[in-house]
Length: 436
Image 1 (cartoon, rainbow, N blue to C red):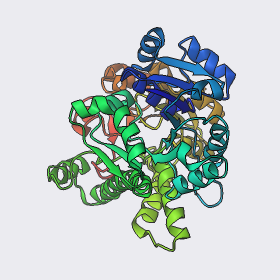
Image 2 (cartoon, helix red, strand yellow):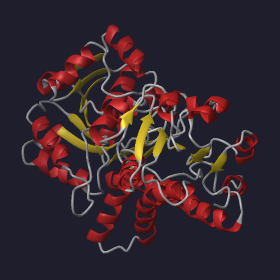
Image 3 (spheres, one colour):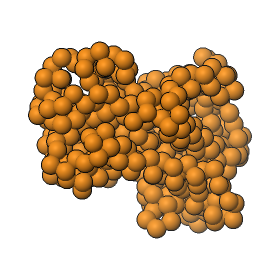
């Protein structure tokens, strides 16, 4: 099949590339000529393991193309995917849909034969109906259908998630649209991947419900971590004890500094905003949002307490700036709250991140960015682990101790054990593991 993907951000680029890997002919469109030029030179705008090689492979095979010309991209396309950004709108937290509707308006001018317009962007329930109204004002109803096909991609594992998903959700109200989506995902049917066909509205809600539930698990275990610290329990053992219950499961039960990224923060806020519009209380998700925002602020206080109650005039070494490992994404990362709070308390900060420092330099000020993690530690009063990159899991602890002014490790991801660090002469502060 021939398809067009509007938007070459995280979702659009990964989805378009993986569809081409399925054997479809894909043209990805973006208004930014610099981004398109870079992609045509196999320079990726994001860091995602394995993406550059898959892009190169499918470009060489003639299945994957990049352009700024939407008309060229949509010529003879049987489906066009909307994969533009839907950031949180200031004031009410609702998803900002201006880019979605602008893409639909422009795409309508290039629809000549039957085309399925598919939202891949995360959009509030009812967006598909509004897209249908936009298209209906310009086109005969026989020329299009509108569908919802939400993405469930984890940054750092997006290719694996697309190529071997645990499910695919397709919201389409006509058999004709369902047939197009079924053909697009036919390679997954051969692997017996569950493909769920629903109404558009149901698919739109599924996306938000999934992210809100996972965010709830994170906020829940973070609150349990606070309790564990007060009573002398170990949150990691608590998580294991409840996670072995198959009704709960062990994923997303890792205590830490709070969730970030491109999905959970904005999607939980958007879901609350949508619920407010329909006068549904949504008390649990609202609390999840509040707990997470407070969590990030509380982690700065935790670091300050570990340093004896003050960081004024002290140097803090930070390892990890991105919201999670294996990505360069800084959106809503806990570091964006924690580091400014430490600076406001009088600390100087030196930091290292394997992939996120270029973006971090645009977001964080008055700090030192180090090319090597050990450089950040030199003469620091404390070492703080904010992101659980693999290269931080096996630090040379003897060298670390020699570089630090004081052997203090604040491990906000619990990648080390208190006993192991105590043997090396460190003061160790984890999350939900040891009373302070």
